[in-house]
Length: 441
Image 1 (cartoon, helix red, strand yellow):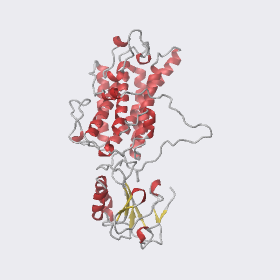
Image 2 (image 1 turned 90 degrees about the vertical axis):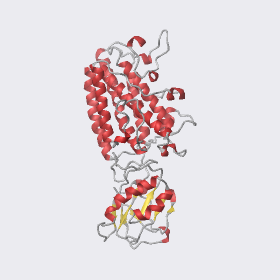
Image 3 (image 1 turned 30 degrees about the horizontal axis):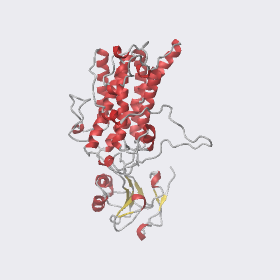
Image 4 (image 1 turned 45 degrees about the vertical axis):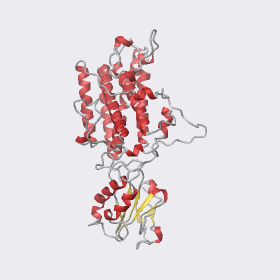
């Protein structure tokens, strides 16, 4: 990374080391044009930069960046950058990371409280970029030196193409359909169902542990897919971590199933009767969920590593399992989608209970990619509305996979893309346990 110089000349004051530039090569891109501030009183600078005064300490400078597109993803990252000729930080400076974490919590409560407590928390000058902050005790998966939002998938300008439309436009949900979705559970019937259910429960336990969920944040274990009330709510940052990890995994089964059925159709030289399109569209839909949440935060290197490892294990396991028993795999995905519906339902409940104030803020704006994909009307563009749309999608996947798990895998057509002689097409979102074969075939 190219080193950038930062000159101290704010507030009419000059630092003793003004003749020397601090080499702060660790800073994120959006802070490279900033300058180190030395002010006597707290004030709000340009572009929402809150300038925090501190005792005159000339040994070192540190910078905290707490803004991640409106949502914070972990403990404030602190890195020291010594000026030329200075000694390594020690004493009060060695405790700066711990003190800065306390400041991050204060910043989440508002600018006023941050400014009033900053002098007792900091031991050197700092710039604190304060947006809609949701800090938390654990770093979770975010462990990059300076977590920040960036454009992961910028639009590439071309001489002739103006816009690329999605391959599978969303079919849309009515508001009544979205609010009618409820958590539910299909009781296992037979050894295959039981095994699929237990694997999902183990995966859920691992995700709870990996994402730092406290015991008080867990719901009733006797009703794990229907209970949505816990003693302690999750934070916005915890929710985003869970969403990203869940959606990075949920997009795999549809692609594996669609790919293998496509290859099987080529080998057997016969039609697939509509399964391939539904499975690939499911995978595409899950990927759109992931891209939407990626517009809100950037995972750290540890989470990215975990996703790569989980995807490798998950893809190959599903590949082998689908060759052996596609029926069990569809049941497994149905149970996985039950967990997704439960997760999003609990999030909606916590938003309604005002436990997630950042997402209840009228100024909070959901990503444009979500507005375009779901064609969300102007009056339904809140975070709660976004979760309602995503939950409805997961309810569709839940019903579809439970139904496909009930069918003859080799010969039965896909009922969700078929025209019926005497009835309307089935609606999987309203059938949590799926349709039995006798009802649709």
